[in-house]
Image 1: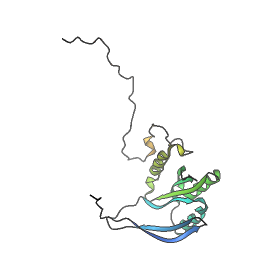
Image 2: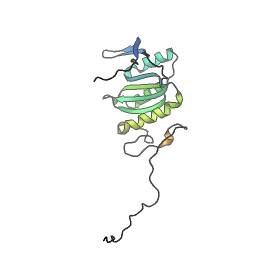
Image 3: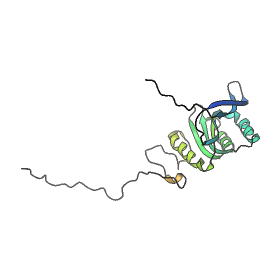
Length: 182
């Protein structure tokens, strides 16, 4: 039997314009239009993934011209596409400073302008923890072992489950002579 298709259709990609290009890449601006189905609340207002750093000024200028926020979560990637830096704040200012500090290493950037700003810190924390040992900064949130992060890195009001060590000495098993059975 085949897989049952949902009645909900995929979003429709609508390109508006080319913001930047070179011999290899075009960076286009557009929007996703909702297909058939229930309306949704978007987590992200604007997003971009693995854009060449050469396009950063053009993308920043286009957002400013359209009166869009520059604050969100950003990711700087190396030439292989691995995330090397993740943070939040003024996306383009922070990305430019990272590129200046590591000019030869960083080639691409991604950013996510979060629709509800109260979720920025949680998204940043999640990305940092998922990035693990590839990341070069933020040792407080990064985890490259089996230890969990601090739940206080998430927003107040979040319910959680946490692994904790038991306190005190471990209970010893009683040793004694085995009972004779008859």
